[in-house]
Image 1 (cartoon, rainbow, N blue to C red):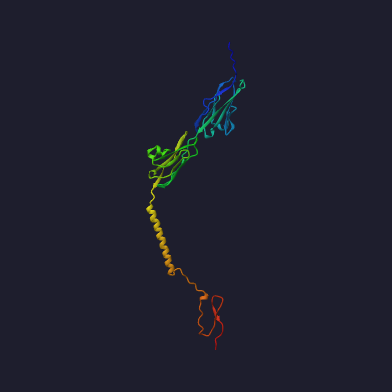
Image 2: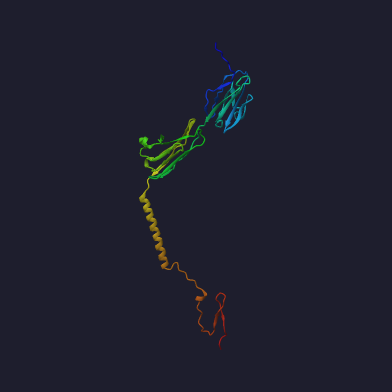
Length: 288
């Protein structure tokens, strides 16, 4: 005859230990009591963020971060009605059953709230000469998990490997889908187009408005002619200045007291120059 011994113990389980939801949606954290003898067990929920626990359900009331936006579904499941990005954390369901031999059990649940990307900030250079390098950038910081980026040329997605598509076979670029950059090492005329970027994660996507990158040829002939014209103008100015110096246009003569010639002494009077302003006075009287 076999004898079975029943051990009274509280045991918990969950339907999903790693649930997720998009921001502003509802999410259920299931905490199911598999076995229990106690009629009215004590049920508590704690949120663990950055290693620090805090109550979100205590003494039969929603508390802390979830106050006014969560509820308990009997017997112990926690339902968050309007999830936000700050709800991403670990949650621990704890059940205490005083009348059971094993009177305590807990279960840990990892919750992730995904956030849709916002419209990314895109930079596309307005014009680039043929043969030069160019960099296009795309960035947004709201999405969670972190966004991945796609670039489009004339509404056609640019592949990470240009050799994978005949349309981009002749293009020379490096596309970084994690950083959102598109770098051309040698811009070609075919790269003249409308460009836009799309940020995407599991929660959704967003994209910026198309912007045109103009690719133009460098006119070497015009540049050489322009340099020659400048040199001719400088030469003419130099010759003109030299001629002006030779003709005395830039020479000035300053008459001073030392250049003054005293008048002749026909009147028999000696004149002496005074110290102030070159005036003259009589030195001696007339000779009779």
